[in-house]
Amino acid sequence: MFAPAYADRGNIIPVNDNVYVFINGVRVADRGYSYSAINAGNNGTAPFANETDGWYASGSLGYAAVQALRPGENVIDLVVEEICGSGGIGRLDLKLVFGTPPTLFYGLTTTNSSFGNPVVDSQGNVLAVRTVFGAGCGFGFCGMHLNSINPNGTLNWEVQHLTGGNSIANKSLFLGPNDRAHVLGQYHISAFEPNGQSSAGFPIEMPPGGNWTFTGIGLDPSTGTVFSSLGVFGSCFNSCHKTVNATARDGSLLWQNLYPRDGTNLGVVRGPGGRLFTIAVNGRPAPTLIGLDPTTGTEVCSRPWGPPWMVGGDAALFTSAGNEVRVFDGNCQAGPAFNSTYANVRVFAYVDGIAIGTESPSGSDTRPPRLFGVAADATTWINPVIRPAVGSNPVRTARGSSAFVVGADLEDASVEKIFELDVRSGAILRKIGIQGLCTQCGVAISPDGSALYINDLNSTRIYRVQ
Image (cartoon, rainbow, N blue to C red):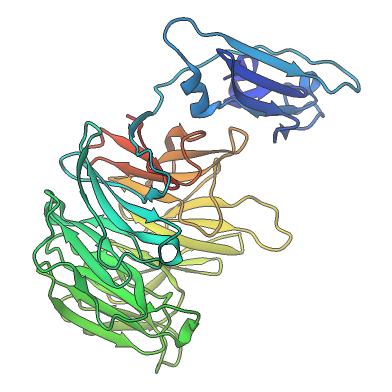
């Protein structure tokens, strides 16, 4: 819903004090003073300040409004409430704007399972790991299944009870060459061909097994080699051991490096020249970034610099610590990339040569967190509209130079949305409302960009947006 007189303010309802929205008799939204409205001030800076005492609320009604619609004529009722003290209700001119609503693509009636973040293969099949819960299972965790869903929304195949699918399993799903699907258990890797058959040589158990779990993953798209890091599970912090491993497409272990007492939170990242990068601590004068030859695991370069947050790809490796982002080449040579005016920065994802991260304040600094992107040449953008959550990766998926991120829309009363971004400029290409769809959202896009899917990570519902 938009207020035509204030169209420049975006998707809002100016209201004093509350408004209740009904569509065909179904109550679909509550907005206003009692329902997290925002006050723009009553000093004349807001164009509607004198009409509503500066109060306005989001005009996004979410999926509940879509569900209440019916073919033909629809009736909308607005019940406006004034908490009388002084003044009146003010002008309420509204218009409805309908977009193409997401449609339910696939969903199970069971309530004891949920899908992880989906992926889409080259044939348009949507794959997702389904976690099953139950009171009679260890820690309430009954196992992991892998579902493949046809482009028409019907089940293609399901593989049940994946190896290593326990309560501390990694649960990551990623595609390799020829649409081979890889799933991480606790310390097992399963692999499946497009027809659902287990790949030759899989599943495999990563040595040393036992009380270990995955902490990082990478893939060589040309050979299908899987690179992984594992660490001891538990609260041992830097006294934990770590391994970095390379597994061939046939499931054989190519090499494995053991790093005693090097901590489990320092995983492995693929960087420039296809080299692998990790952090080594034990036996070094300081935490050290090291580069590894991906074919042998041999250390080829090092540099004292030990922040735990790293992302990278063919163009560069990015690390973050404090308020600084540094960029490294394939020989561990560093240069400054970004110095934030905020106290904390963290890189989360690498998309088309750009590191995407968040900057957040500390102490008495009340500025909102912001999303940023930085290139290897230190070119940086900061998006002023998206407010990301602190401490979690806002990037859900990417295709080409587009990244799909989750955050609050500061132009729309801080309503949570999914944004498609041009990672080169930080410009918003589109906004997708998720109210009524998901509170924790997974996102997947088909390789050709023709289909976008959003799923509720707390259920088995997957929606198609386009």
